[in-house]
Length: 459
Image (cartoon, rainbow, N blue to C red; front, side, top):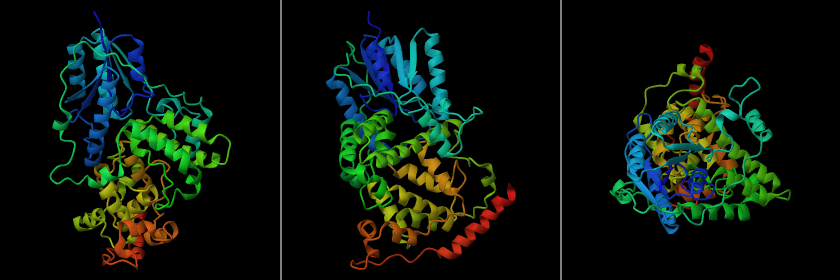
């Protein structure tokens, strides 16, 4: 009698370079895939609206691709620990495989499940798949985790090179009888009343196949200009791979090796180095989350707990969210985010700095908004980067570094192309009335630095 292998898909919605799937195939038994929408387990953060939209479409493609190769992807909703045990019992699984997660609550779920299944005689194994270097493998000379990026990335580069990606399987043998699966449409991941996802549909095509095309197009067309133009939001020089990595439609190993192979030692080598260092920054955020699981809730640097945030003004937060602050680069960025589920990284820093340091609104409010509206918001990068801007995180920008949004617009959007696209009323040759400036930049900068004095005195 066959003892099928169960592959638990999480943030690794791909067939290529999927070690858990490869391990299941190597058992030479039928393979069943499962995805669990876990909105019940304690500590697991519910997905934001834009993330739910992406997940629906990525799962739909993954399910179809698995079916084309002969097997099934079972969809279940509920507490992951309970659901996985239920599916194991239903199919009589002899083995369960998954790729590792690094958030605190997720690790606890996986550890409990692994121990319980092994006690029941089920083979269980987990694999490194979604980071280049696992968090416990890169440490300082004293065995501690890094708190500064440059020595962290240097240590990564001195470690054994990331493994080569695994090929995509051509066939996935399925079970004789498929277990029951939820209807994806009944999960209500897509917005309906109102349907606000028109801009997302226009800009993005989720799924592994589209992810591969985007990587190929970036390497062929944009890598050469990446180093010089990546800070210009209108230049189109960024990779747009962040949601692909967030959902695991591409593995970082694939991005790493394809980039090096494409660039070689030729004219794109410098740009490739800069691009891969951004992949290194992503690694740094995940390593930090592993060692500091409350990254979205607590200041990593505890002295910032003394920061005297004033009482929240909902009208100011709302103006920032809607892109009605009276500052062209901030408003353009916030509208791009709302329409497309994305914002250029330079503009993310500008809008975050404005919220934290000019409006004096706690970084956690901004992090929550980005979590809900970004298609690429993940548990590590999103809070890590907000704490970086706030000065409270690892290797963070000092709090006294306040981005002037007008100077930033002059420097990085010289022709006004980005602002003209997303906030056209600020362009001289278009109709429309810009919002009145919400605050005085000079006065609010001074107010922010005065507040920071409280933190300095608490050290």
